[in-house]
Amino acid sequence: MNDTIPMEGMKVSGDLVRVSVANASLAEEVVARFLGGLTDNRININLFIGGKGSEGTQFTCCIAAPDEERVKTLTEPISDLKGRVQFSGPVDLLSVFPHRFNLKALGLSLIALGKAKIPLHGFCSSLSALTFITDHADLDQASSVLQGSFSLHADPPRPFC
Amino acid sequence: MDDKKLILVVDDDPDLVEAISMKLASENYRVAKAYDGIQAWDRIREERPHLIILDVMMPNKNGYQVCKELKGDPQYKNITVVLLTAVGEAVTSTNYTHMDGKTALADEFIPKPIDLDSLMEIVKDYTR
Image (cartoon, rainbow over all chains, first blue to last red; front, top):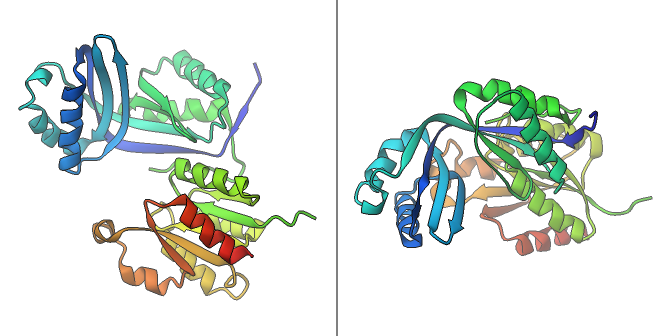
């Protein structure tokens, strides 16, 4: 397949940690309390992916690595989160933009990352960008794979943080 | 000849660039995009926009620098610049100062988070 989709740029948000509750379902108010704690303490959430089902809510979010200890402290008093919250090793967010609402762009990205055997911890789309959560150790390879999957703007899209 | 006015939108947040661009396009403007200060200068030279919506905090070259250079260049100083600035509290936590904003000589300052309707009013005022 020789289809290439034009993209104007690529953005990296680095030095992050992934916080997730994936193997348990939480009541909505527990998630709200967790997020409220982050807000009250002005802790930035770089990305939040949540899913709500009949049994409750699960989520994955990314925060700056230096905020990890503060977030751990904030989760301690929330009994429903005890033993359920996992903090990952260093991760990065890799975004390509703009997707122009072309679903093929997501397909191409997933196939390319899959073929390269790059673990993906989550992905989401926004108004302009497709964003992927990858391990920091895989950043360079993931970045090359995505750059190879799209026709990037001639006026070089410097990957920026 | 296409008489639609060309607006350059510069921000390192692709979503904000897209949101502003969509709004401008719906108001019948042509739109050029850039995601950092260096790319902004490339677009300015290539396309000579009527107005620039310019973020302050960007990688490679910040919005104050771009604005200052633009307003100091006889060839481009008449291009209107609308600077998107972080509000007071946020500004003090960065390397940027209010003095940078004053010396950058922008035509308008809009605090972030921006109100798209107010931004459009300003764009319309300057492109009539």
